[in-house]
Length: 480
Image 1: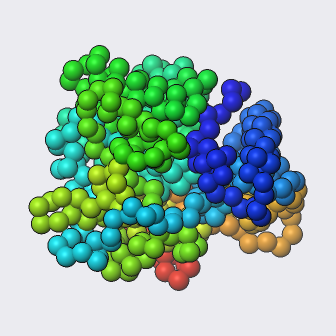
Image 2 (image 1 turned 180 degrees about the horizontal axis):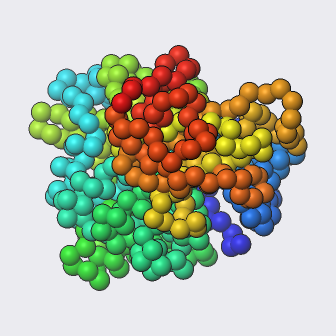
C-alpha cells in the first residue's frame, strides 16, 4: 500500500500545533511523532492485509491499545477515528479524535453581538450565493462525517445553477474513469470515500450528471508543493473546458483564501493566483458540535442556544451578505446540536433525505461483532454501502479479544439511514468478512408497510420500521 497522504490535521500535530503530551523539547516531540507516523502507516498496511473492513478495524483498535505513548496516541488516534467513521461508528470517531475550536484573534464578532444579522437555512442560501461564482469550495473534517452532510444536499441545487464538475480531494486517478462509468465508488476509488456519507456524496454527484474528477497532488508533493499542485490541477480542469463550473470538496483550511496556512499558502490562494478566479469558500468545520461542549468554539453554544436549529444555518444581513467567523472564508455554516439514537447520530438523515431503518441484532445469529451494510439493489457487491454499522453487545471501544458466543447478553439494536422509495440489499458479515446472511428490503415512505422481511429479523417491534420513531429509548410506530 502506498503511504497515505497526510491530511493537514496530522501536519498541524507535526508542527507542534496541538499535542496531548506533557511539555517536551520541540525537536524531541517532532521526532517522536515522525516515528509514530511511520508506525501508524505500518499498522495500516498490516490492517489492509485483512479482507474485510471490520477485520481491518479490529487490527487498528488493538494496535492502539498496545501502545500508550502520547506521540503514538496523538497520531494513530486520528488514523483509528477514520476507520471508526468507515464502519459507521460516528460517535466514537468523534470522541476518539477532535480539534478543540479555540477562538482566534482575527475572529469576527458573533452575529448575535451585531445588529442586522438573521439566520437562514444554508441549503436555501448557499445555492443563491453561488450564482455569481464559477467555483465553489466546500471543506470538511476528515473523520467527522457531519461536515459532509450539507454538501450531499447542496449538490442538487448547485447542479441546477449550472455547476457540472465535482472535484474530490481523496479520489485516486487510477479509478476515476471507471468511477464515472460505474456510477458509484468502491474501495479502490479513494481513501475517505470508504466512509458511507462520503460515498453518498460522490454517488449523488454522479446521479445528478456531474463529471467527477480527482485533483490530488502527486505523492511526493508535500506542504506548499502539495497546495500548489492541487490548485494547478483544478485550474487545468477549467482551462480545458470553458463551460466548466466546479464544486470542490477539500479538507479543513485548504479552502481559505487569505491568511497564514502552515507557514505557506493554501490551495485556494494558489488557485486564485494561477487562475485569476475568485471562488466561493464555504467553511463547515469550525462551528460544529462536540460531545464534550468544552471543545466547541465559544460562539457555538450561544448561537445554537438562540436559534435551536434543526438544520445547518448561516447568517446574512439585510443586504443578503453572509457572515463568516474567519477572514479567508465567505460564509460560515452552523450545524445543529447532535442527537443519538442507538448511539448513531440522527444527522445521518441528511436533513430530510433519509429515514431511520431499525435493525435487530438477531440478524447476526450470535456472531459478534457483525457488520450490517445496506447497498443500493442496483449496485454491485463491491459498492461502498449507503450506510453500514457494527452490532455487538460489547462496546466497539472495548479493547481486548473478548468474543461473546453464548451466555446472557442483550441483543443489540441499531438503525441504518436510507432513502425512502429505494430498494436495498442488506449483507451481514462477521469480523472475518464471512457472509452470515443477506436480505432485500424496500424502504417505504410513511404509511407504507415493510416488505422483504419474511423472518421478522429487521424490526425491533412488529410495525413499519421504515417510519419508526424513537421515544424514551423504545420504538413506537405510526400505523399504515
